[in-house]
Picture 1 (tube, helix red, strand yellow):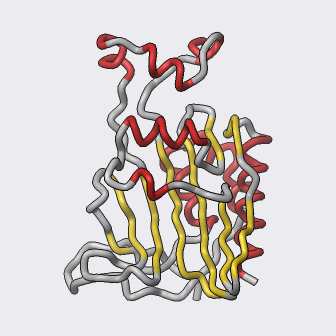
Picture 2: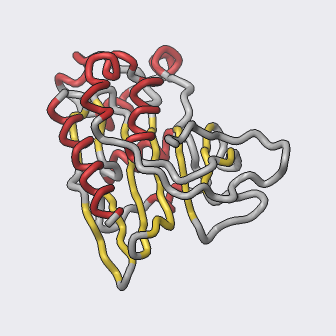
Length: 223
């Protein structure tokens, strides 16, 4: 059953991240079942919809961290969200998000304060020195919400309205490899073999491209 495979893959990644010191906090991986639908998530009630309209803002980041709305909080206070939905064994949705911390801190800053306290203590000069203009990276899939402006599978960056078509739902292995290789190359260099063992699932290609000449994301699939 695909939902159980995905749950095991997320648990493997979370456990690896904690053992390797890549993560400093984590939530249990849950499987929530209702009728024939299964959701693999980090919380009984992930409140991701609360942040719609606030994409890539400091308020959104603070809200997520305050509620611990993530699978793992990384050592640099960025976080990762992994949520999949299945109808029987068919994937019908996912949200995969890497949210970089918008502020740069030194490890010694946390001797007496936590991340939320430090953000509240920053003054104007500190903001100028520490603020990092980095966008969340999000891969979404929603089989029901398909339109010309909203491909079933898409990649969002910089703006909530930026939905770049992706040719298929993204597996845990694909996402983990993408994030670690491009944003944490030292982690990938040191632990790439272990991370690659998470594996890649290949789901059916979706009709995600809304026009013939539109830019889209694809990857080579095994024969």
